[in-house]
Every structure is written in structure tokens, then in C-alpha cells.
Image 1: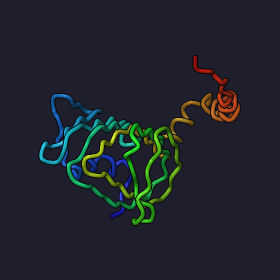
Image 2: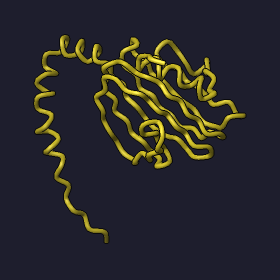
Image 3: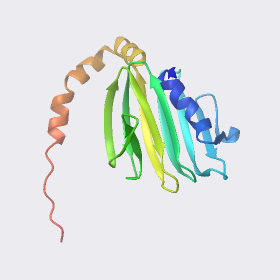
Amino acid sequence: MEQTVIDYYMDLPKHLHFVRVAEQSDECCDTYRMLSDYGSGSVRILNFHQQFLIVLADFTPQENFEKVSEIKQEYFEISQFETDSSSFKVGGRKIKQVDRGICCYANSHKTAYAFCEAGKPTRFTKVIVTRSYFDQFLELNNQSLILIIGIPEIISSFSYRPVVKHL
């Protein structure tokens, strides 16, 4: 099924058996809790104009969960995985562990294979920025272009890490 990246993440909670918690939600932020028959935990989605998402997930499913979706949209994805039990499927077959830490992707078309293993915690934060949002941001903020051009120098200045000896 082909969909936008925003649709994919906005639909994910109901596929994982989460219910919306109205008392903790508003027009920009939806908070969900997992139904106890399916596991425990929560997902929070901050949605800015269907163009920019922040997804905060912390849950443990009782059963394996798998979802395959075709996403056809240009977007940036910045992800931080806080557990090493998170995984995805490569080519729809082989399960690949996700390393703890931060990763960043620029996507234009992909098949998303989400896989959550029963009894293992899934904890991540994702920032999704659509191409249209990014382009509008640059148009409105010409100074941002100067910042983006300087990013390689900024990153290289942080790449030096002093060695700290343990006492």
C-alpha cells in the first residue's frame, strides 16, 4: 500500500494496538497507550501541519508485529534508537538489528518494513521532515542556507574527541 510518510506514522499506533489518550492529546500532539492485551507502553506523535513529525515511542509488544508499507515521498528522517532490540527487515526477509545511536536518511521512495519482536522493548525517537516543509523553511529563512553550507565544517570541528583516561 503506497502512502505518505506522515500517513505511515500517523497510522502506526492503531496497527500496533494503541489507543489515543484524549486527556494527554491536543491538535498538535497525540498521545497513545498500548492496549494491555497486546503489551505495554506509549507512543507520542507531534504533528506540525502534516509536514513535520516527531515520534517518541517506548513500548514492549506481547506478540511479534510486522508492517510493510510503500512510502513515495521525499523526506528526511533523523532517528535515535535507545535499545538494541529494535530491528527492521532488509528486502522483506532478513532481520537486521538497529544499533543504538542516531542515524539520518534522505528518502524519496522506500518500502518500510517495521518489525517489533515480542517481549523486547522498542524505544526510539524519530524526526520526520518532508521535502516541502524543508523547502518552505529555506525560502522563509535565507540565513538558514548559510548555516547549511557551513555544516561540514561544523561537523568536522566536533569530530575530534579527546581521549579521557579512566581513573
